[in-house]
Image (tube, rainbow, N blue to C red; front, top):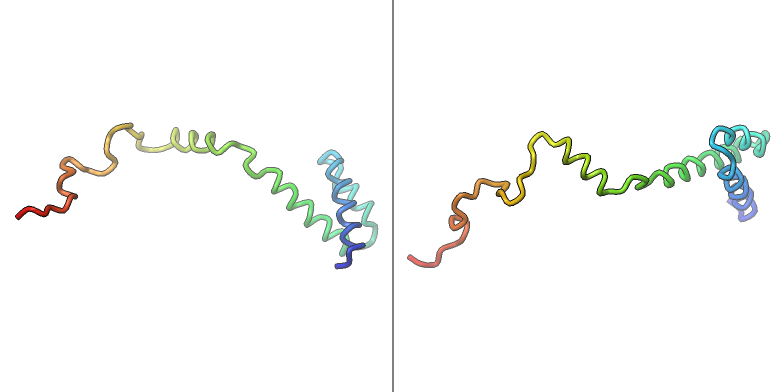
Length: 96
């Protein structure tokens, strides 16, 4: 791809991102005209831009809280998650 072609693709994408979402497809089709390769490149770049804008749109803490609420077994703070009634059994003993 030539630098000029990349500038053309970028310019159309930048302008399309300024359009309301429901008008983008019509704008891109008009801007690309009959150049199917240009249309494909612009649509691909816009799809990646949309995916990137949605990345972490919800804070990780909110997702974790939702998963904890939906958990089948509640987590008891302070309670061992493994049956460890005698922690000494996990310690290697050096005495005979």
